[in-house]
Amino acid sequence: MKISAKINVYNEEANIAAVCETVSWADEIVVCDSNSTDRTVEIARRYTDKIFNREFRGYKDKHEYSDSVTTGDWILWMDADERITPELRAEIEKLRTADPATLPDGFWIPRRTEFLGRWILHSGWYPDYQMRLYRKAASYWEGVAPHEVAHVRGRTEKLSGELLHYTTQSLSEYHHRADRYTTLAAEHLHAKGKPVRGIDLFILPIAAFMRTYVLKRGFRDGVPGLIIAMFTAYSVLLKYAKVWEKRNT
Image (cartoon, rainbow, N blue to C red):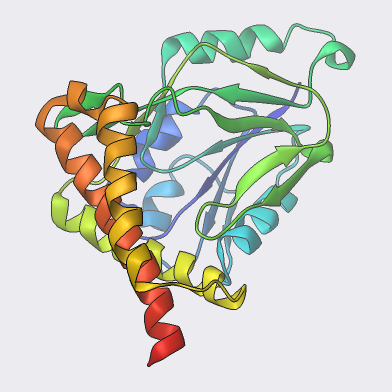
């Protein structure tokens, strides 16, 4: 079971060393950059010589390209702001001793996210299973930008060890990401001809807030949970308002 740890990056000088350290036990580390303007590539060279540059043409394109330049039979996909727990590493190392023919084509890994100094265990953020370890030959990418995800054609299983996700460091950064992601989502909905009524801009954000804060028990995450629910509602408003804007201005 040869494992390629792949990391797609752009201006990640603050994270690249730590994420490379957390996967240093993999058979290879593949870093795929998109013309970073900081020290990301310089730092990454301390850990691997397999550094590639891909002009950014969308997240799916970058994932497909970075998968293609790995040499392992299995890919462990990591974001730069994620870390592997000792428990997860031990589980993956144990898989190496198994007969490859008995393994599924992919493994779902639970992800725990830190936000505003607190681990978020509700709000729809946990356990947040991610397809992050998958058989290269059986995988493909699908989804709506920017949340394209890896899929596999065969059987999957869940692991219990966690990925730790150290997300945005400030609310300003979180707001910037929400603006960027809702633009991508709005472009997709607009291309599909999604109609947006004025009432949608009122009802859908309220429904998103109630779903996050009440049904998904965001209230148990304290003030960060309230902020998450409010931002979720705001993001829904922003996404559909951008669709309305494209159709009416």
